[in-house]
Structures are given as C-alpha cells and as structure tokens.
Length: 181
Figure 1 (cartoon, rainbow, N blue to C red):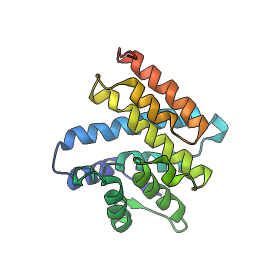
Figure 2: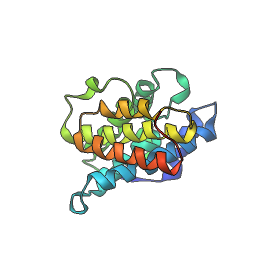
Figure 3: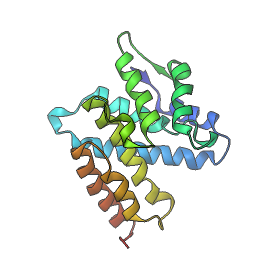
Figure 4: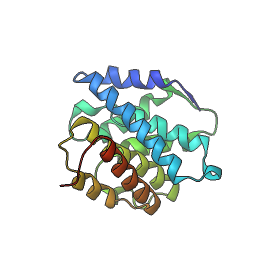
C-alpha cells in the first residue's frame, strides 16, 4: 500500500467547503494522537507497519465528508468506496487494508454496538482512531468537558485501547492545563 500524506489531506480539502484549514488541522491532530495510542497499545514486537499505515490513512480521511451533515461517517465511507484507489495505491491482495480504512471512516462515530461483531483487529484499529478523535476535541475547545470525553472512551470495546486512551487523555489535559470539573 502506497500513499502520500499530503494527497490524503488534499482530498479532505477538496471534499469540504467550510472551515477547511481547521478540519485539516483536526485530521493531523487525530493522526498524531492515533499514532501515540498505537505505539502504547502495541509492544515493540507487536508493532506492524501495515496497521500503522491503516491507522494513519483512516485518521487523515475520517472526516473526508465532514460538512455534508450528521452522517458524514457513512457519506465518507461511501465516497471512499468509489474513490479511495485514486488516493491510495493498493497492491494486489490489499483488500484487507482497504476495508480496514473504510471501517475506520464508517465507525469513527456513532454507537460502539454497530461494530462489536467485527474482528479483534478491526475493533482495535477503529477504536484507536475513534479515541484519538474524541481526545482531539481538547485542542479545539478547552472548555470541552473531560468527563464527557472520558465517558465516550469508557464505552470502547477494546480494554487495552481504552486504558491507553484514558492515559493519553490525561496527559493531554495536563499539557493543555485542563482540569476535570
């Protein structure tokens, strides 16, 4: 699988009309936090470049159709089902990677029950980006309640992702000088 990070960000730019640079900044923050969570969830010998590439692509593209309405995750998945091969070069046999990116985009928001029957790997990848997206709210609005973010992380299915995400949330809150209230 080959991709250029800037090309993925450009897709987000072209597919959204409002508040584009803020959305790009958000996608980059979600990417950074996702990588941080992945690094902590996976021991050094468990790290997998394919999984990391899937997480990076999913994080950068998760809001590709953000400004189409409340179902931007579904609209984003449908858009990428048709167009993803224009932005990411998949090798023969990369259908798994393509599908995981689409799952991340589709399930980064909404009920955690909608994907609970997915594979353990799918749940881990989805929930890493999902948790990073929640934590990223701290960077947009410092008045956003930590309790609300923590509650959404507590709903996650993967216990290791949940534990690490809460740790990262607390670290980010301290660095941004945000307290639980």
